[in-house]
Length: 94
Image 1: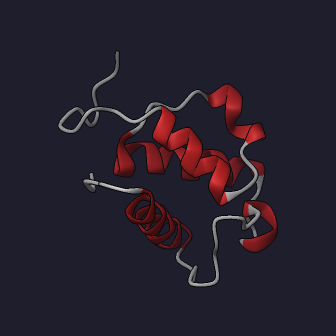
Image 2: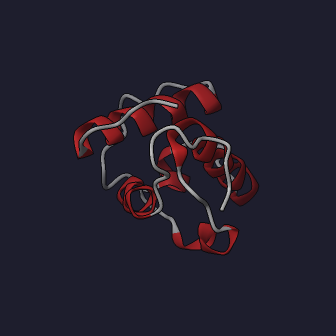
């Protein structure tokens, strides 16, 4: 898991992992980027898989009921910040 200190680092880390997961260039993404429109081929299933991947790599608890409410990078970042796990607890669940 990447140790993320501030909002800019979180943004950069999440975007980098999105690019790794989707195996695509994500340099055009901004905070207000709409995930489904900006990332070709990002279906709702692929978004769900992406969030599960980010859960492990970035370290936050994900409630699968909210995936339909995450449309933009900013919404994803806000969700991650609100549900971050303390450092050193990756892979542990409550």
